[in-house]
Each structure stands twice: as C-alpha cells, then as structure tokens.
Length: 260
Image (cartoon, rainbow, N blue to C red; front, side, top):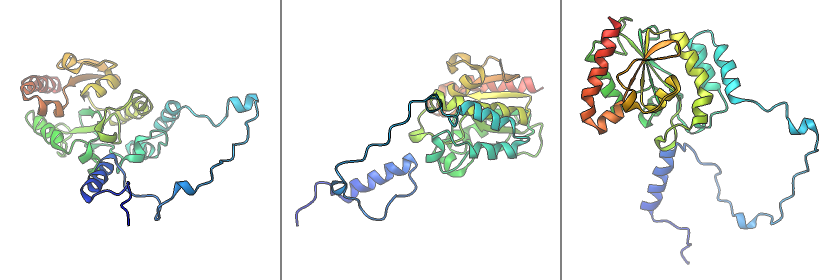
C-alpha cells in the first residue's frame, strides 16, 4: 500500500491540532472524510437577481453600529447589557471565543479600568485580566489600596475591555470591530457610573479618548465618556519592559491623589 501524500506524522498532526486549538476551534464538522474529486464538476448557477430598486437596497440590510447602539440603550442595567453583548450577532470574534468576557469587580466602584481585549486565559475563565498581566495589575492596584474583590466600594475597582471576545492569536482588534462594540462600552460606563476611568493600552485609549500613542499619553489626565480618564501602559507591556514600571507607579499615584 502506497503512502498518501497527505499523510502526516503524529508530531506534525499534533502541532497542527494545537494551532487550531489556539485559533479557537472547538469541534470538527463531519464524521467522515469527503472526497471532493467525486463532486459534480458543474455547479448550477444561481438564479439572477431582478434588477429592481428593492433588490438593490434590501430592507433587511442592517448597520451593525446602529444595531449595537439600539441594543445597548435598551439595556436598563448591567445584567441586561451583558445579555445584549452576548447576543450581538455581527462581531465575528464571538464565533471563535469560548466565553464572552464582560466584566469583573464591583459595579459601583469609583474606578473603572478598561483594557483592550481578552487573552487566552481570560477567554477560558470568562473574566478580564486573570493571566500574568492581570496578576500584575492586581498588585499595582493593591499598592494604592484598591482591589477588584473588596466589598468596600471606596476601595473597589470595576474592570472590562473594549472587546469582550478574544481575537484569534491575540491580534489587535480591527477598527470595525471596535466601532461596532463601542456603543456597548459607552453604555457600560454609563451604567457602572464610576468617578474616573483608567484606560490601559492603545486600543482602549483610542476607543475612549480618540487618541493613540500610549507612551506619550500616559500619566496625563484626559476627558472621555464624560469622565476624567487616566491613560496607562498595559500591564503586558510592563512585563516586557520592566523599566516602564517606574512611570506606571507615578500614574498610580496620580490616580490615588485624584480619588482623595
């Protein structure tokens, strides 16, 4: 029996399976192999669409941003908003994610932290900032007397992301993905009603402040979503560049002073 050219050794097959797992694949489709050479050579052409005004402007065509805005504004509280986010059908990222990562911490906290998007650990846990970067963030907050798990709203923080689903291979969210999820973020901040917002990373700074260049923006108070906003470098950046932790400490002291 000759060896088929498509046969793989088990190491290569395992590596390809792990790669698919990292992309978010959770199940295979079809229990039996399909020989595409046996498919019909001629595929019937679809029926032509009538050239009418109704056909050129279909009534069912929707604007994802407008639909997101309507769904967000219809949510009376955070629980309803979380359900609306999970049900939003237009962001393809949700199809490859294990969980919708909505928030963590106390919703009535004075400080709301907005990150960029979940990573692998966050996608698995369904909570934002639980990996190494999240552990560093918790230590940073503890240094100025704040925590996500405290029952005291004066010392609590509330944490979310611009994007609630993990992008494949942890890539940056695309502008169109941010645009369609921004109405949910705006409503999220409105319902959580913090005293101030901390944005970590360029994606969050762009979404809330309309600016990028986080190493230039950090440490200076801005205004966004009707609230004072402190831009900071993402904890993942601090893990890669420990020298930047000195500047992050100065930013934390600014936040502490503002709360007082």
